[in-house]
Amino acid sequence: MKFQRYSAFVFLAAVFGAPSITAEELQLPLMQQGKASVSKPNKGDSKAAVEQRFGEPLNKTAAVGTPPISRWQYADFVVYFEYDHVVHAVAIHKPKSSDEVIVLPAESDPKSDTDSTR
Image (cartoon, helix red, strand yellow):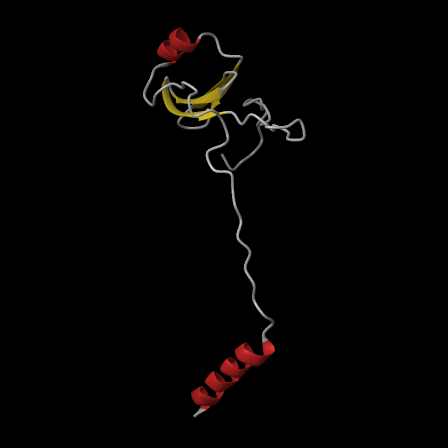
């Protein structure tokens, strides 16, 4: 009996007391973060092979963590290495207008990094 009263109360509250619910369709520009034709290193490539194929990177970030992960930045993509091999290569977003801003991860010195979550 107690359950039936509770169920009736919940039903009436939902039907009469709840505000109307609406939904909005969002359209996200998928796969527009870079040119699809940008050539990037393949997973498993060595650092030497990447440097031979794409040249000297614009920036090299020292390895941090266990296993050691390092990052090389090129003009169109960023390559992530575990030890000496590629684990991921990501295209850099190129803004369509000057209103958009590119935010890259801040460089951190692994020796002075006090973040205990790593």
